[in-house]
Structures are given as C-alpha cells and as structure tokens.
Image (cartoon, rainbow, N blue to C red; front, side, top):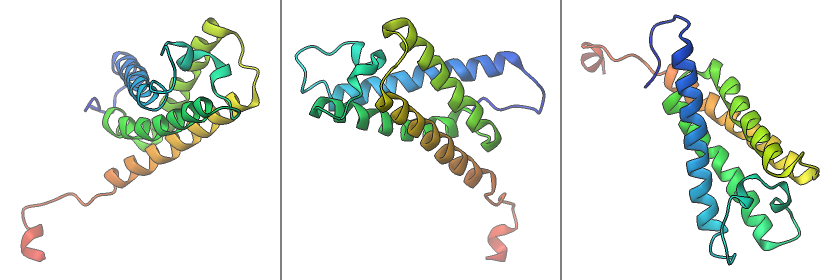
Length: 152
C-alpha cells in the first residue's frame, strides 16, 4: 500500500507509524468494547491506558487481557497491509508498543504490575512474529507471468 522505491522517505515512515498507531487503537477499542464494554457500567480510556485493568483476578481483567492479545493478531494483519516488508515488522511493532508505553506513563504512571509487562511483551512477540510470517509469505509468492498458465 505505502511501499515504494527503495529510497529513504521519512514522510512515508511517519505516515506508516501514524497509520499503525491509529489502526491499533481503533481495533483495540473495538475489541475492548466487544469484550469488556458489556461487563462494565462505564467504558472509558481507563481500559486502554491504566495498567491496573490488566489483571488476572477478575473476569473483566481477563477480558481486557484477551482483547490486548487479539489486538496483536489484528495488528499483524495491519503490518501486512501497511508495512508490507518482513524486515520492518519488528521495528513498527516495537514503535507501536513504545508509544503505548508513553501514553500509559502519561495516563496512569509507570506500569508496576507484572501482568501488564507480560501481556504487552507477549503482544509484541505475537504481533512481530505473525506480521513477519505474513509478510514473508507474501514476499515469497511466485510472480505470475503470462506463460505460467500454459505450464500448469
């Protein structure tokens, strides 16, 4: 989608980062609304950025954890659409989660629960590995030619 010639284009990189961040929060919001929104009286940004919501001691906490992990799978699909190169997947994934860490720092302070760090670490690993695998599969597809049908 955004990938062009093999030249360094800072505007392209910034636009890809902004797209990945926006799509990541859009999909996380949808997943949180579906999984958590039905079980809480008031749905807010608290579930996005407050580390205390990622807990294993409540049903809502487990739903939040599942939403974050599912969002990393959706994020891998966004890597396939936006980044398109397996070598860049780890960079963009880490960028998304570093921005998320900074927003969490601003919203609720330094995350101090091991659950928050484990969930986000697993999300980074899942999104990067799955994104690289998806992009690699696309990159390794055979290039169709006019005579490829005749050879089959």
